[in-house]
Length: 154
Image (cartoon, rainbow, N blue to C red; front, side, top):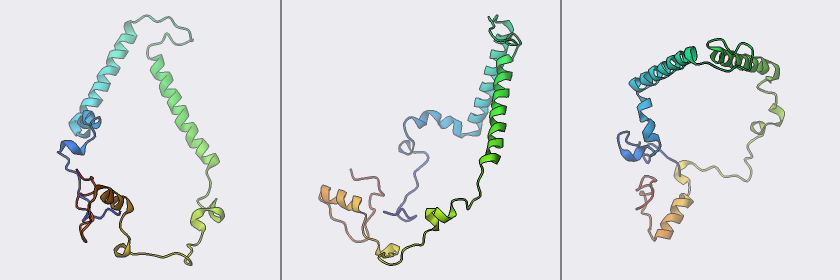
């Protein structure tokens, strides 16, 4: 069944039912102050780890690992190499937009013979809702196809 503006009611952002239970824990990230707190928290964590790196003695196995900030620099360089390599690879394997055009599904003609086009008013009732109503022993009245707004009956 098609969801039209008349049949679809927007969820209330303030209601408890409009958000999944696990997502409720992360709603604080949806505000500007929440994002600022996250960025400040990450900056503090980076400073704490850098301070620990200054005083913690490591048993190094790779040359250069004894330098302060080695892991951060190695990670940044690795990430940069991956991104630049992906951009170069894109240039090498990129194809024209019409590369698959003669064989693409969207190149096929729409078969007019043997098909019937229906506009919205002529569309048959949604079979899932009809089946649900039949199983629950309800009958639909004309014009009340979406009385429960698609949420199911209670």
